[in-house]
Amino acid sequence: MKSKHKKNTIPYFDIQSITSSISTMLVLLLLGLVVFFVLSANNLSVYVRENINFSILISDDMPEPDILNMQKELNREPFVKQSTYISKEQALREQSVAMGTDPEEFLGYNPFTASLEVKLNSAYANSDSIAKIEKKIKRNTNIKEILYQKDLIDSVNKNIRNISLVLLCLAGLLTLISFALINNTIRLTIHSKRFLIHTMKLVGASWGFIRKPFLIRNIWIGVISAIAADALLMGGAYTLVTYEPEMISIVTPNVMLIVSASVLLFGIIITFLCAYLSINRYLKMKASTLYYI
Image (cartoon, rainbow, N blue to C red; front, side):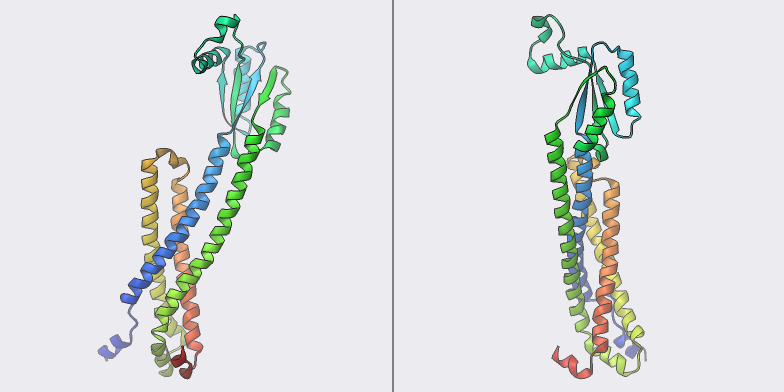
């Protein structure tokens, strides 16, 4: 009795399972890379937008304490990420170093004005928002001018939209391809057990009883493959951040956590769904059909 039971039991791990795990891991690795690039591209777009700044040129008539008060008020605004005060003297020093000569020596006066360099939160880093912000700031009569590169901002936002659209389309396409590849791998595995499935039907086993070992085995394949893919992705991300520490603002722990969770979730759902559909196909087949597929 024991030998018969062992003989009819579907092994959870055999050569087919190992081959299927490797194939599934490679597909999940590809899917994880797509999720990684989509999330990293979003962080990159935020990083680029938040490093676009504009300059507020301030009249010489405005005392420095009033400028600093205005800076504090600006910092409380939701559109401001960070602001830096540059005095007339600091501007002169920086330009003297950049030009290699002191303009004050031959002009007889400091030609530069005090300014505030403002970095915006990413949601406000577009021409329409900056135009509204400009009107609001210019209500102060001590503001001489607000300088920003409109063409650069428009170009950055346009490129970010185009890249995001391409990545989303690529993510959708690769999700379908991943499903197809994993489905084919699982179907081949279950195909080799089609006569065993038919034999179990003949002895009166219910469909649920027949499905159970196949579903459990393929879910485990999905979990193991996802863990292996996550380990490779984590290792790659760690290497990238170690090589270029500034990438930590783009390849954040949250990004890697979402990528890892997505790969694990995809691994479980896709393997379960593919196994369920494949086993149902053979459960519905008649005995005569099994010899012609």
